[in-house]
Length: 457
Image (cartoon, rainbow, N blue to C red; front, side, top):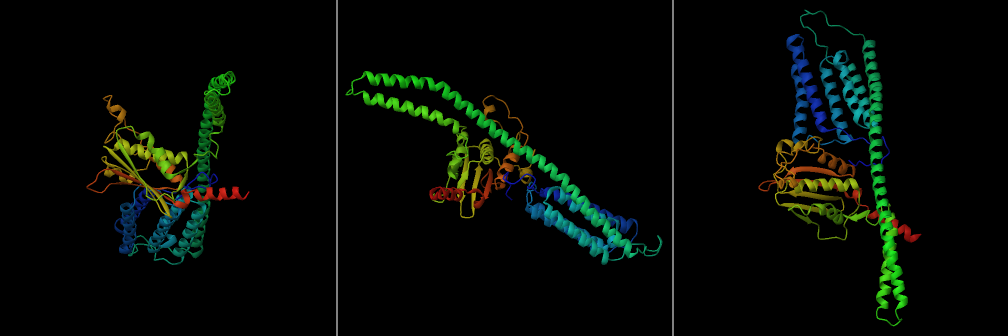
């Protein structure tokens, strides 16, 4: 799932965490089981108990399978979340078919999956789920097993609801699905728009502050260095005039004057840094990795970077601050955890680009592996310490668990997929894999197209 601020505000949907849907389904399973037990054994109303429990057990099996095969911190795509919510609608429809259809008061629960979709998924997905819920409600209104009631008539004769009343219930459900769904989506969209607008504003402000600081530095450098360079130029010219034309020092004086002029020209170009066409805004992936690794080479940990032997098709990547921060955070964590070695392996094919960072430290705690990437999840204070505190005799402070979350979010916005695992035995340590589709991250084709247009012009 590729997320980028290039999309218009309000048109990005960050999906649902798998853990959220699993927890909600466990809640539904508990409620359904409790309702079946109460109706069958406490109220004594006859139910097709085997079929009902089988439908509930299917949901429990699905939850267990999802939990075992996927990390809890995984964020689902729009389509994946839609399929899981569609299953919840179908499962509820199956239970209602077995227990009286629309005459069952729990038919109102058709609203729940649509409401969840409206708050986190796209309008298209919400509409499709709303239509599915309305169709399922209509089907269980037309065909259903009898409403559970006392078989011996102790509670009274089973009520016979007129068809027009059942139609009214279906209409009420359909209207509620539409109204509540639209209202929830509108409220959630306003929240998304505000959040995204603030994020865009922060990025713009950060860039403007960077450019302002750079402009101020360039102006100060030009001001401070301009006077001595002017003095050097004047003195060089005076020396050149005072020396005979055939003096062996004439060439040296001329060289000094030329280099002083060159320095002044360089100072004049400093103010153009930060423009979109700056030469280092686009870099090969090997340079990006070296740019990320360089600040961490002086901490007593060996960092080895491995690249494919071929370099002709090396991807060209935009020097995105978010991408650099995300990769830098992963490398920094690896250096902090490592005992002595960090390996960074980059690879690319025609389809994808992958960067894998491994260390020889203690690895991720087993109980946290599934939650890596979620906010406020940290193992600081357990296996980890500040290296600058070792010399001071102080223990490292616990972190807030936001570093990996921010890095993961920024990398996913660039189109990356991340995997956090421990290295298989007998090796030990953590391994983080970052993968992009090549068509998402590689901009070499764009540069070639622009160069061709410039040449033709």
